[in-house]
Length: 108
Image (tube, rainbow, N blue to C red; front, side):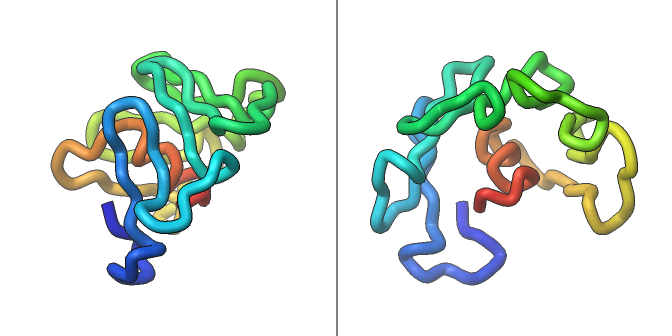
């Protein structure tokens, strides 16, 4: 997956089914682990930066509010409350959940 910034090597992320990390300059702090249910940093995971996926919603393990819960209907990712055209992401194709999650969370 390439970020919106372009296709420079540092903007390319690799997802192998378990780990999501930048293709260039990957370190423990910017590598994320996905087990099919939880998405968390490989280093420094806390309850607030570990996200739970229940098949429809992505929310922090702790401190979930309607503004930091993201819902996915199969086509669009949007906040549970306050969704606008600016904070709704339309998914074309079959982009894996953890990749979408890092995009909507503003990590990539």
